[in-house]
Image (tube, rainbow, N blue to C red; front, side, top):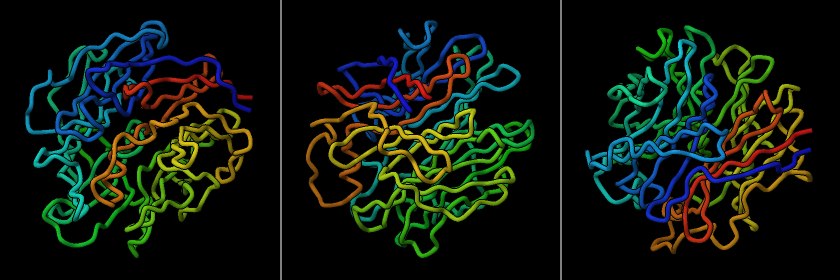
Length: 367
């Protein structure tokens, strides 16, 4: 069973919107959060913001925009901070070339060209290195884009996994070849190789979007996907896949019973999994459910951590395209982790209430 114990704001500022938060507890006891901010979910002014908390998320101090608000021709999105065994921090992020007003070309579905970035810090995130570009030689740039997806995983000192999904770039006239995949570093992030596909419908009908994954207590890697029917506005149930050999091979994606879009699994010490997911059906919101078998979730006892009400979509579309509709969503990208010291789940997401798009956390008790 799940029960909401506590909740609060990460950041709420009516002068700009905030999206896609990730909270990282450090070994020092301090918490860091990172997110991207701007006028809209995928606007040209998107930039990274880092915040810190010394009271377990009750209050947050913003360290400001990562690039100081300067326009360098890129929109920065989706950061995630990880603490490394040697005490350094690694922040993964993605930036998109600003060649238009939309992240997607609404007619061709082509994506502005992204770049995968790694930043390093030796002082708990007070200063950061220049970005290290992560390139994937296995993906010809004239046909593929690759943007970050999922969580960065440190499986061992010599096996780090960086998860991505592919799409098609501006200028490419063919259909998208969408894959959920990852690359591997065996030298602690200096080089990345071994492009490995997790899920790919070679017919092009199904899209395995926004893969989110976790390591289960028994060492298996469990991934969940927003599964969409290409060329329509229709979603299937969230699908899942598992690897029993550190990501070398993966089971074929199978459906769960969750009617979600982005869906993040959170492993529990007893072997169960909590999934926090976007429920984009009336009533719209963000839900959390438990499963004992990785496939069937207890929807009868799931908990709503955010009710979107009338602010599930922000504004009206000018076309009938799914991509334009999705860029107007009012909540999303839920994530979370288990807190061993309290035995609770800490979830975080972005949402809109009172006309302000902001970021929040919710703590859940689990029994």
